[in-house]
Length: 506
Image (cartoon, rainbow, N blue to C red; front, side, top):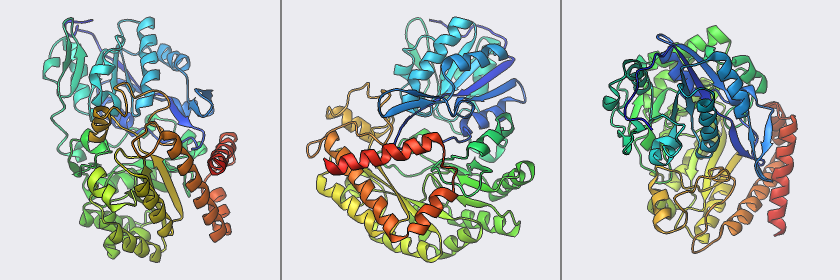
């Protein structure tokens, strides 16, 4: 353990996005890791920077964790081969998902075994909310909490000087006596000041060839992730994103957004945009300006919003019309619960279900495909509430629906409630947690096993209703919008129907 930062030259920095743990029910995804892409763009003006996405580089490499759960991407030995070849002074590893930390821990151990002088740094949502626990891993030198475009360069400068770490916002590390955790208190005021993500440091053509983006659907293989804003001003109790981004909403200007969109079209021939904002349309006038700009500049993108949208903003029909005209082909509604009492008293989500029903009708009238997210198994939820969610989902006449199990994410007040009630332990972050396709807790009115049966029955019911209602559209979109005829996709379909049929029988 160190008492302070030792002076150390920094010339080469390797940023790694580690392999992903998934459930056989869902197809594997392969998206540009925007965190390291933004960070790489900031660092490369002063350092020799390399980005390594273990997922895209090893997409077809799968290892079984359990009968239902697997990991895909380069394994740690393969990542170490890249590290040894590059000889970096600093290795930064993203830990976006809690169930990635086990492999992150294994990787930093191997880095230190190879060369103890290499500095290891981890960032992402899991270490941001659980820094004390993550620092138990002695091969980990530093944690950069929250957005890192300012704090990570500051850390590298402190390492080069051998001092200054005590002034860095959102930094966690160990001393001989104790852990030092500087809370995250500052966020970038002008995100227009950030350079565009360093997508050119990643193998873009590999993403296009694999073509399984977030939400698994794409009309065009040359699609990329895109972020026009950061954060959310609301305080939904199950979601960690708002807290991660400082419980505030910051936007890039329409001019800055349109400039990057034009760059993507001219430099890479991009045909489709995946807006991964938490709240793309929260500022309605800003959103309209962006969509008008896309139309006027004849960018001709297809686009969607895999993270969902702020539903009440879509009551503005002019906004929805502009979305359609600028290339939006589907909208996902983040409803979460189809029971108003649950939304108001458990989730704390500012959503009116009757307004949502009217808004959904308006979206369909504009010719945009409609999807929705729903979650069951919130602590304190009753079986009657869960049944209301399924009933409401079927009433919306959705093209696709995603039913998920609630998972107690670090950094959320609902996780704290689960801990206080003894529904989970403080070590609730194993490989089979945080997958949303597996229930991991039981409450007074239901068990995890019961929820598992209920959810898969509803998946089967909704799938067959969709097939019967419009078989041509069902099969046409399933096989046209994506390159789904791969070995894993066939396995995914098999596991999905097996799971659903088992639930129906039980």
